[in-house]
Image 1: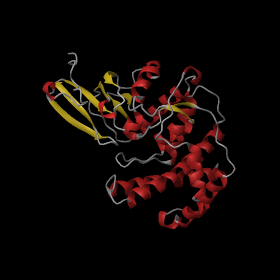
Image 2: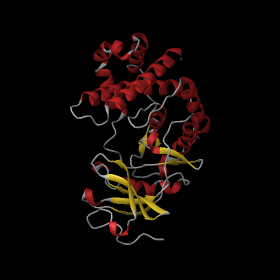
Image 3: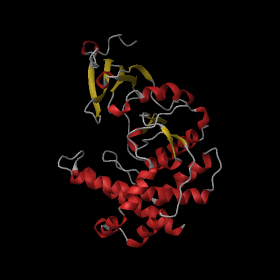
Image 4: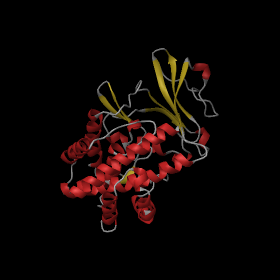
Length: 314
């Protein structure tokens, strides 16, 4: 059954005249909803309006110019509209069914293999990858973390962190230059953006795709916390994920240096994340329930502890 030509109205809203049932999946940053809709009991699609006005046209561009090189690990776009008016932008994607975003070592290790695969794509063949406006550059994060050193060190006891490992992180921050290697990056590879579907990995939401350090995707996969998607990563699993990546990637790396740089990247990013989560907790109107933000904070602190300890031992 094909989609009716006017399944989406001129206003950018779904046409209820054709729809049997609708299910809200999540709310975007601009208040618009991503939904599953049914044309019959057995036929459903995903309706995704523009959920962040700063991303206008990006995801369609990625699907047209980047993802054709990929195997079927992403949902295909069935139909779309791009307009200069944000509220008129939308996509209809294939429905992969109910997705499980519970964290597991199996899924994380599988994602790591695919990260190594797309990181190995020759970037000289990838032209005009848009730079996302919403993602801070790592040098910006590093500068902010460095400038906030004294304040952060004063809060260590309240965060349950020991002083010596964190001071060691800051000492490395002042004299370490991260590798300048650029790879194709998914850009937002948190737990909510991948799932195993019938034992097949599917990776969602490619609108943040850009060129970045290999550590960016790996941090989001391993150590980035999220209020909606809890996870617990042990030091042993982190090591295993990184080793799987290093065994699969198709360019030469100095393994020990890569590991050390990842731990430092993760520790610095986690310090920065702690500041963001604290601001969320102090906001008059909370973006997320306090319980979820507190859990996110604890996950980030644990990641910081583990990576700082690994750096001292390396």
